Length: 477
Image 1 (tube, rainbow, N blue to C red):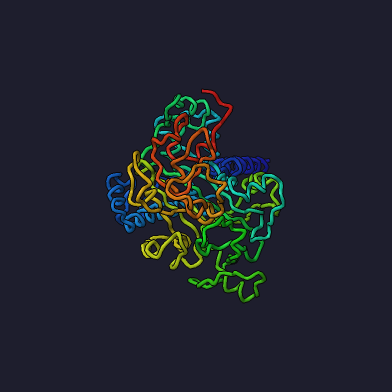
Image 2: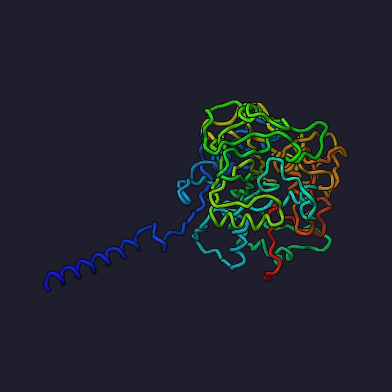
């Protein structure tokens, strides 16, 4: 009897220890949910400063100092792609991957989340991928939306296959929440009859980004991806489906380091041509889809021809727009994957490649850089400048703007009537047009005065087209 009692007591003690250990075990079901804390932009490159003093940035613009502009843009990229010290489902997260996505910010607004002193904004999963809003203006997406037949064979597992995760750093998120800038009723309150309305400007440490991914199956041996070979001449709408140039990413990373790629431009490539155009998946910044992201992805692509995504599939970063509010018109830099980053195709340059810092990770160093810190040259004032006697400053991303045809641009170009295509755009010029009332007011490269009459009876969005795309219609202040 005594022995039996002892055994019972031991069993009870073991049970108690088990339940206590489960309560304290971070891998138990109750505590398995991840908490991702947005990380501020770190200073990775020596001499880089963020936010840089606006007077210093303006000093780089008149006369235009490409070297300092490129160095600053690379410093931002180095911070975005640095390791955050956090992980999600066993995968390390880069700094930009910890930031809240636009949909997550919408959810906070819909829940009526109020900012409190010292509040820490967090998320519990990776930002879902969505269709790039700007591509909806292109002919390819117009056909898609109308249910017309789309050729999905052009290197794509999922039809169009380019997906974005627009995100804000915490200062930008807090600004949106503080001023409730996603509410239609709030934005309407800034409207002025026969005058120009404006939202409160973002703080100088605000950053917004548009990471753009190409999705492929993890079970495939190779993932075929459209590869950029430079701006077409003459200029034309140049969608990735008509580039007819590809590289192949080896899912198992079996390729030698530093391999020079010969882009595949053949209609029927031989095994040798495919091998010459094959790199490693590790040459890309990438994320691995979990079940929730795959489900959301499949819901987003409803109606798109192609396969469905599954947990474990790979989203390879092919491009990223990055903008920072360090000057009134923001700084604009865009990055795109380059098969041979030492010799990038335009709109990047040999100088931009030469200034790429050594602090970048292997994958982050595989991207080319294009900048648009001014709209035209020489630089013009924020208001009251001119399109006379100036030259273009082209700055665009091949994976995002090259597809645009003249029908995309709702604002006539005053610099030159020949500027009508996406490869003739400038990030700053186009985003200067951001407003509440007209979502189609896109522009090719030209000078835009912020007191232009086109803005009368409109509310300017401080260059943030992303706000226009995320307006919540049914909430009232």
